[in-house]
Image (spheres, rainbow, N blue to C red):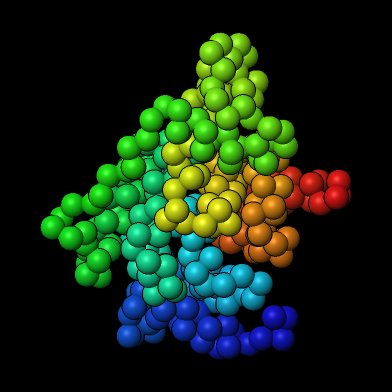
Length: 268
């Protein structure tokens, strides 16, 4: 990258802008960004779209997944609509895009997830991907026993120990040491969300790490980084997540994420 001219960086940025936005005239869009934002607009084009989006090490689909997760967690609906379009152009399905924000409910809360889903639905409708008859299908109706069983099965490898397949009659301090919150987490985050088939476990790890990184939740990253590696995310892909985080949530959050990643890799 050190020997690239500005015109080469700008050309890559325009290619990425065309794919993200579906705009057949990215030159005009780039010019508008600069006219309206000055140097900030230049950096959006040349750095975020040119440097970051042109990097190897992770596919465009995955980078779209990362960016959507970050923007949803930070409640950035206008920017999110742009990147929902980009995600579709990079190979994600409408079902997968919506699933990102369904999963987000457990890690950034329902208000942010609902706002992100609203923006995503607007963008998808504009692209001709609105739901049939204007209605989306509800979640699978699960019994309490089924929620717990599925949650315990998924959570066990995350915490590194077996979780009872039947909810204890009185779980005392909770199945993972969090009191009532632990049982609720098993039921909902793992029994409901993580068990859904609309995204792979790998994709779910990518989006959870992206959300936690954007929110600065380093203690939770200590749990979810090793989980991501077990779910098939590579060290190099996590490094690319960090780089992307720098552009979309800020360098301080990226530095904090990388410190947790480095510490984990030292232990292995």
